[in-house]
Every structure is written in structure tokens, then in C-alpha cells.
Image 1: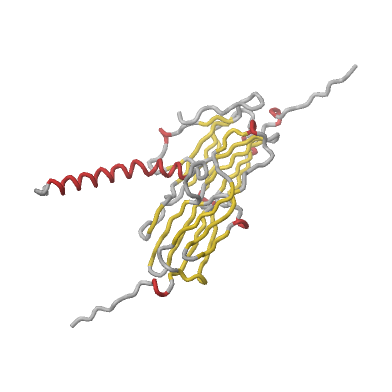
Image 2: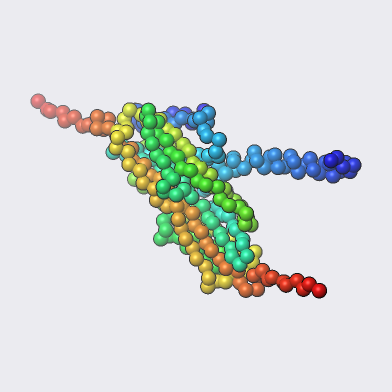
Length: 134
Length: 150
């Protein structure tokens, strides 16, 4: 397993990543680097998918597994004089914790960066209980 | 099929092995290439294409603030500079689950092998890839030589 459970914040694991090597298609995929951070509203996932066309970026949630996928066609290298990078399709999956409201996930793709907002379900948000003094 | 020169055979074998390792090494090279700034590699990574009169330089720079991008030609070099902002400033360290994307200012100077026409440069930033199109200077353009048939 390349990825394990993430460190706990506020006492509850929110995102757990899984390895999906076995089910990959014969195509070449790379794992995009991600930033994941937590705010009071939810989790934000930021992934670098340079070179992907906005229409090719596919985000879906099934059985609590969030899948980020972008198919990038291989570049024509017939005129390449110098090569440092080769674009490939992107694939990465995360298992969502119970805290996430899967119905309200918001995705935006801009300048090669995919930003996902995963809001916490209402019941998972911290609630302050007023203590009445007698 | 089999030559009689053992040195040539060895040379051919060495080339085969090199080719074999090339295929193995490239995906891992690519993977680390996607984490620029975390290592001492140059950033952004570039590809150069050359065709006839043009040079095309592609730079892999996702999430760069387009307003911060600077492209310049300085004494035979192409300079690419910009800034990739951090996604969130006011997040406490313990609220980060993953931090794999590098951020910050970058500058890269690429020495061009041929003189270019400094007036004819276009730069385009799309889907996180910066594409700079350059035209070779007249002196560097390929010339077609007519073959006289007697």
C-alpha cells in the first residue's frame, strides 16, 4: 500500500486513500500530487492535472470512493528536440469518511488545477452547546 | 544474422539493455517530475520542439497565477518566471492532510541553441501548460539547396 490512513484531525479521520493498481486500465497513468486541508466547512482537495482539457477531467463518487481521472492524449514527439516531461493520464482515488456530505461536492478546474470542496455533513459540524448557569 | 565481430555483438547487447532500462526508468522519473520544488530539479520542466523555422517551448506549470507569468528573451536565452500561490494561507498546520504540491516563485533560463527573432514571440498559458512559440532568426532558418541534375 502506497497510501495509508491520514493523520487524524479533530479526532476523526476524514479522508483515507486507497491504492487501485489492480484495476487500472492498460493505459499509462500518473498519480497527480494533491494538497488536502480542512476548514470548518469541509475538506478542500487541490490536484495538479497540467495539460488536461477541462472536458477530460472526470470526478465521481461511488460507494464512498472519490475518483479523480483525466485522460490526456500522448503528445506527438516527432519534432521533439529536447524532452523533460511526458504528459500522461491522471488517476487517483480516495475513500471518503462519513463526515463528508457526498451530495454537495463542488469541483472547479482552472489553469491545470482541480479544486474540490467536500463539505462536512451538517451533523458532523462542530456544535457549541451553551452552558446555562443556574 | 550473427556477425563475427564479438565487439559489435557486445555493443548491440549494451544498447538493448540501455533501451530496456529506459522504459523502466521513465515512469518513476515522471512521477517525481510532478513534484517540482520538493527536489533540486529545475522548475518548470520543459519540452522543446523544433520544426523548420519555429521553436516551440512547452513548460509544465500548473496553478500559476497568469498575471505573474513573465516570458522574456535575454541574450539568446528564454526566461520563464512566475509564481505558484499556496492554495490556502490561513490553515493551521494540523489541518493539512496532504501537502504534495509545491508552491512559490520560480525562474528558469533556457539557453536557445539557435538565434531567434525577438520580435516574433508568442506565449500562451492553457490548462497549466505554458507554450512559447519562437521564430528562428533568418540566419538560422534551414535553407533548401536545389540539386542540379545534369
